[in-house]
Amino acid sequence: AAGVTFGARPAGGQAKNTLTVRFPAARFTFSWSAQSRSWQVSMDGTRARTTDGGMLNASTVVVQYVDVRSSRFHDRSGNTSPFSDTVGSGKATVLRDGRAYDVRWERRSAADGTQFTMAGGGKRMTFAPGQVWVLFAQR
Image (cartoon, rainbow, N blue to C red; front, side):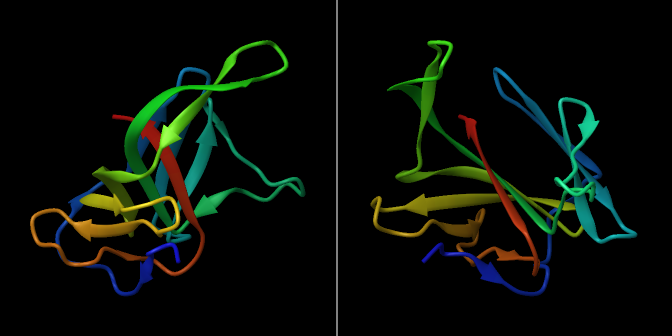
């Protein structure tokens, strides 16, 4: 089980219109659209589209801060592929309904789902119904 709970927007959070997450080889920007009630996705400054030309949107975006290290795998150019360690615990930012929430994530073993709880209270973070994007970013 993923540990994700869908439900009504929790109290708190901070109003947020955009969030950009930078990786060594890419940049993702999520922009809130009140009209579509979703986060519009851009990659490297260009609005992301599906193969049939539709716009990519997410109801909830999770930026989970993890330890990232080199793996034993390489791409066709010989670059080392990163390994994101998702077992343990740490901080995350959850975007939903035009707001950003500071949350805590915890995953006790590789066989367990990841639990997301509100910072300071331990109450489960609820995600908006619909598509959820999870990005693993360097701590």
